[in-house]
Length: 210
Image (cartoon, rainbow, N blue to C red; front, side, top):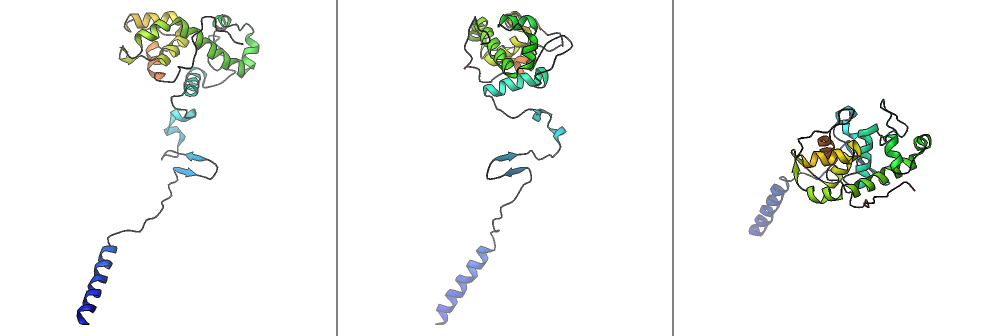
């Protein structure tokens, strides 16, 4: 009887000792990660927006929508009605002559219509992709002037400075540092807009806004 009592007493002491080594699990609530039944909302640890300047546009990853919004933010901070000091217009800062090449001749209507501006951007990408198809095939994946060349980077640079400037940059191995009137360079655009998904853009020499 004494032996049996000693056995159970010892077993109880062992269980108590082992249990004391574990902390109870508590679900901690962090105010920088919030969720509701309807949607998930994410916040970075800092509550100051100024600490995260790049969050002025929505996070859209490397999908095509991300490419469009990133270019738009760079060009005009995403404002459809903006006209800069050089006369470039809209969310993607089109010049009047460039608009004519894709079938847009009424600049007033262009500025009033977000839908028309989005179509114009895609049409110009299609035209530029056709004109740069050989360069996209030849240079994609290569490193030029320290920048890994990608299709989306080439298309963004063409939007900035035109097809001819992109070709000069690539074939000179980056020695011809082409810039626009505001000082933005091919190299910067190729770096900042590289790696986005633009495979869905159809190369079309006759692309126009429909």
